[in-house]
Length: 334
Image 1 (tube, rainbow, N blue to C red):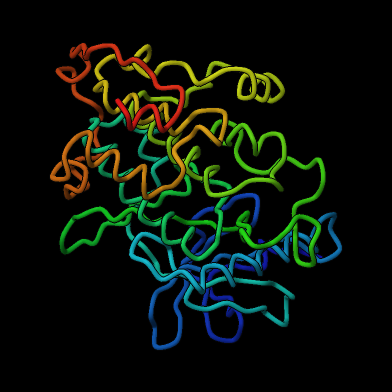
Image 2: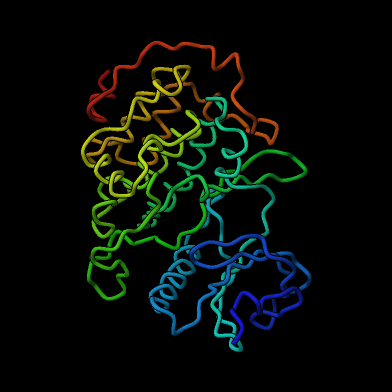
């Protein structure tokens, strides 16, 4: 029997209505294809490329179904929508249908440019905050916020970037108790992406709330500002878990001394290892960034031309050393 990915060649009709055109990329949960839908409309298809009898296929299919149901409830400019979903009967293959977006994810941008100008990184992060706040308002925790799940969509007619939170495959409902029917997180199983996962999620993905997403977004902003995530120097997974749970993130100005002190303080207050001390929500993180740099800067339009490396003039700047707060409340008081 051919692997499922070998069956999704150009010309394959999926679900009786979507004709595969080309493969766009892949990951742990499957692959994404460009396809033509009814009326010739171009869409993106995310397909779960795993045979039903393989290992944890049942759980993966359940997660895939969860992603479809979660995204169907999230209608927001800063969230990638799922417009259709189904199972191809001939292949037994679950799939999601999304708009075919123009652009690339933040991880691809950072791989190419290293680090962004601070005002660009902040403006992108604020848009991501809006998408996450919409998910949180629906009682959904993403649990895998990272640069590769922040898609930078740009319309050719305006060139303006819209940040869209994507890939809710690890999402959980805030009102779903661990071990309840439909709960998918297994005991002792790591979930997330090590360099962006919160300390509490590194210990147990079951007992997390929206503050774990705040951490993931703050670490993504740290990466965009400094050119690497805070714990990039830690070579092993176990070493990383120990670092996450034992100490706070290294001062961002040690890696990027040009980052303005108020911004550094906010980033670190959103990365505090104790979730009770951390920034409590994506909305509050966005508001703090608005106040730190001014709403004209934090809500500025970002274009494709802005996705370039931080300039030498920026990197030659030495900002005052930030005194980091031990809690979000301390940050607000000072």
